[in-house]
Length: 70
Image (cartoon, rainbow, N blue to C red; front, side, top):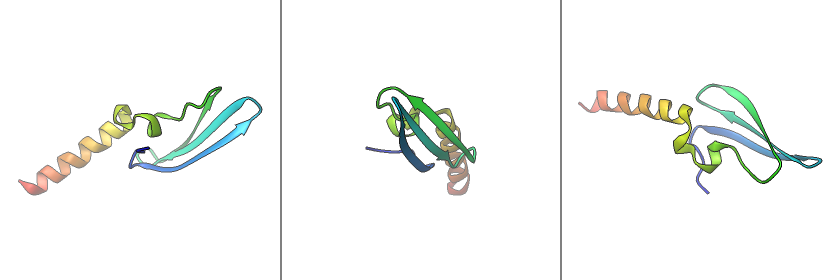
């Protein structure tokens, strides 16, 4: 399974009937939690190309790389 390159840590816990996903995003430097009844990981693991934080950081890096290669 592919994960977001900016995902620093992912922890999955169970609390009663809930699954709690704790994850750290390198882009916004924040720790986040996602609660789910079924096995539904955060967007960082499922489809990180759709994440707005990933898109913004990837675009910024691509512009920086393009500036140096021109």
